[in-house]
Image 1 (cartoon, rainbow, N blue to C red):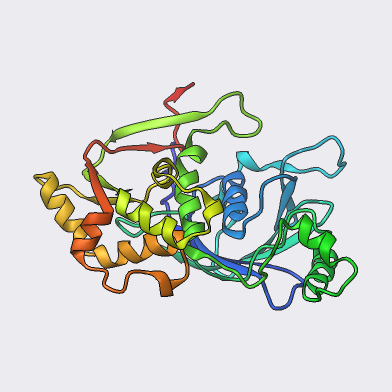
Image 2: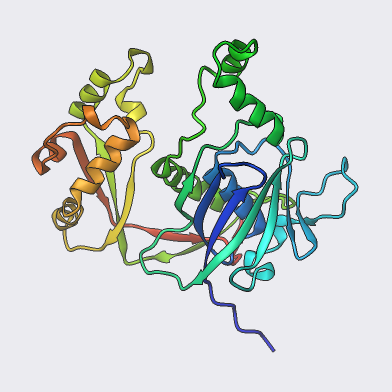
Length: 318
């Protein structure tokens, strides 16, 4: 007898690096039917790791990751297990280790199991604190030594470490908007990519959904303002500005004009989101952020053909 397909739920998780004080942590939402490999990619993004190294999950004394001949440990391939196959209850905890050399251990707790919210976008980062340590800095001990060195310009290793860091490193920096932009940017890539252990990416194309999208495009006055308040070395162009635009999933309307009015209904939030993404110093933001100025600085493109591409069912392989 065929079994009923398990309902998709939302897991609210909190992940924190162990043995570091003050703590470095992230709280985020994911759908329950993603693979553990996809969870690995999400963790890389919300923390700010660069996916250079091997990883593993330890869940109920089982190991999941990428089998590697260099390591003798038996490990289940993460792309073959979904989150809801191994996580079943709130408050369940498990470990995620990234980079066997530096051994960055993350303790993850499932804080809540929630229903899917209509119109919500997943994965989504809710909160967090402090910057991710730099790759290859020597694990917890090396990271703590690095922080001590960069806090003392008179230290004999100060110039060497700051050069290795590319000039500066702010351990307190946490940019929620940028993290969620990265999650949006990667979402299509994750859906269409080949999973480890599979010969090709797999994709299910669903019918069009009753939604439209609004794309926020930058205009020349925004570029002129940005260049006037930015370092000359940034060399910002219109191509750079519009290479990664904010996209909003919105209801369908009878006309594009109605859809644009819908977006303009919360233009202040969109205005400040874009300003914060490109220049965090609020003192240089325009004091009067009116709808008129919003229209001068931003264009809104409306597209009605929205397809839903999901990866949990296989109908066609490329």
